[in-house]
Structures are given as structure tokens and as C-alpha cells.
Image (cartoon, rainbow, N blue to C red):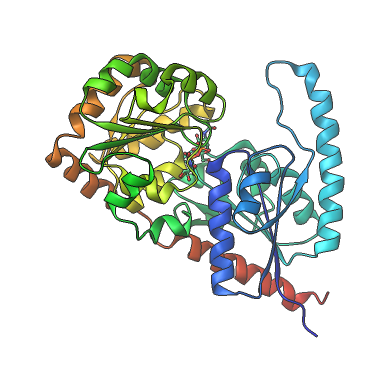
Length: 376
Ligand SMILES: CC(=O)N[C@H]1[C@@H](OP(=O)(O)OP(=O)(O)OC[C@H]2O[C@@H](n3ccc(=O)[nH]c3=O)[C@H](O)[C@@H]2O)O[C@H](CO)[C@@H](O)[C@@H]1O
């Protein structure tokens, strides 16, 4: 009997890598329900929780990132990398994938390297306008490289590049809940203007400090807020905000599982400029104030943000100026319907539709070709 096609998807570390991976898996399953998919992540990282929650099996590698400040610590990182390669080889031998997909993040390094060396076709997906280190290393062996920005030939072989945009979780696009119901699901008032504050999948200190230092401003604004702090900042936030009754206009949480509801509720979003978040704002036409993180490789979030600002599709506040300007700008903007409409129309024009399906089709082509040439 012929065995089903099997695909490994590897990577993670942050939501920006995990959610595109889940969305590619969903698209493969939708197109080919018989496909078997296995995720390979990094032990202890966010994917070990989020991927099973999305309904997929995941195996963790003992991989860690290089410490650029304390070089001696990297000896243990190297040992972990070797162990991860051995484990990845075992996983691949047992699962026998027909193709492997890498979405960036620690685990995709050893997994795709081993897959490539065993002759299994690989596809990588680069979310940002600046290529990550892992993806640059994996690019040489990769068959296809799916990107979300133009000009990526400066990192990758032009022949391999496909401009697909970033895949977005399907449930965000098929959201049925009304704005009113969505706002009620956060225990807020549907008659009030609502601002969603997100700091990427892990939260953002600068944005959180703006909220903590602006609690009086928030109380007096007449506007309400859904605030995602990230898991590292939630205790401090809860302590300062106290009981929910103290600030009925502020819904505070460490992580929002139902982002579809959060986007439906929001008249305006305040956010870091991670590539995945930006793709969501484009697809949903969300007016947004971007505060790029200055702590990422090559300042790529500023580049992500400026690409939108150049098209009048987002407002932009520098991290260093956020404490002074952010809340004031948000409270003013959310009460200006014309500005919101203009931002929404302009950002929607930048959306890439169908990214996950396009990538899934490419993965499938690679897998079928491999299967034709190899009987398991
Ligand atoms: C600090 C850091 O290294 N950030 C990088 C990371 O961002 P990060 O992991 O923050 O990723 P993105 O902004 O790209 O995406 C965040 C994702 O998390 C989801 N979400 C967010 C908050 C929440 O409470 N619930 C939830 O589900 C969003 O809907 C989105 O799908 O990967 C991105 C994509 O490679 C990069 O562009 C970012 O620079």
C-alpha cells in the first residue's frame, strides 16, 4: 500500500516564526487531508505549547541560541547543537519525510541541515525584509525560498525565491464575530472606542512602560484598551493595575489566544513591527501605530515599519519617543474616523492574499517529486 506524503515543519522561538508554520500546516492539510505533518521545535520554547494547541504533534530538540556576549557559554551551545543534529537525524529516519519546511528560529537549523544532507528537499520561509542567520545558512541547500518582501536577492539565490507574503493563521481571516461581541468577550463596553495594545508574541517593555506610566491618562481618556503585556511583564502589570474594577477601561492579559476577537474589537492597534503582525494588519485592514523594536537584528522592524509609512499606511513612533507621544497619539487618532479610514484603506492595499496556500502548493510539489524518485 502506498504511504501518505509526510512533511516536517521546523522552527519557532517566537510567534513570528510559529504562527506562519501553523498556517502552512493548515493549508497543506486543507489541500491534502491525508498528509502527515510533524513539527520539530526547540525544547522549552513557545512552540512546544502553541503547536499542540493548534492540533499538531511536535518533537523538541535540545537546541539553544549562540550567546554573542559570553563566548565561553557557547561551548555548551555547540554541544547542544551536536545533540540536536543527532536527534534530528533520528527523527528524520523514523518519520521519513518527503519534504522539510523551515520557518526560522533555532530548531530549523539542525533539522533542515540534516534533512538537506540526507537528500530530502527543503523549503524555507523568511518572514522579514532582512534575512535571519539560520535561513541564510540553510539557503544554499534549499530548493525554494518563500519571502514576504521585495529585494531579497541580496541574501538568496534569485532563482529559488518566490514572493508569497507571510502566511497568517486561517482563523484570523475567517472571523465571524461582530465588533460588539468581540469587545464584550474582553469585558469591555461596545459603545466605546477601543485600542488594542500588543508587543509582539513576547510583549514589549517600552510599550508596557507607556501604559504603566499613563494609567491616569487612560482613566480620563474616554477610550478603552485591550493590553497584552507578554509573559515576562504580567506580574508587574497586574500589581500596578490592581483589581479590574480600578480600571474598567483596561483589559490586561499576558497573551491573547483569540487574536481574531482582539482584532475585531480594535478600532486602532498599537504594536511592535514584527513581520507576522504587519501581515495580519494588512490582511485585516487594521489602522495601526507602529513602535518598532530597536533590539532586533539589523533594525529590521524599523525597515518593516517604514515600508508602510512610505505608503501612508501606518503611523510610526520611535521607541525612544514612545513615552512622550504614544498614548496621546493613540487617544487622539482613535477618535478621528477619517484618519482611521485612510490608514485602513492604505494598509489593506499591501496585503498578500493566499500566502499559506501558495507555500503549501510549493511544498507539495517538492514532496511529490521526491516521492516519485524514492520508494520508502
Ligand atoms: C523581538 C523579536 O525577535 N521579534 C521578531 C519576532 O516577532 P514576534 O514573535 O513578536 O512576531 P510577529 O510580530 O511577527 O508576530 C506575532 C504573532 O503573535 C501573535 N500574537 C501576539 C500577541 C498575542 O497576545 N497573541 C498572539 O497570538 C500575533 O497575532 C502574530 O501572529 O518574529 C518576527 C518574524 O520573524 C520578527 O519580524 C520580529 O522582529
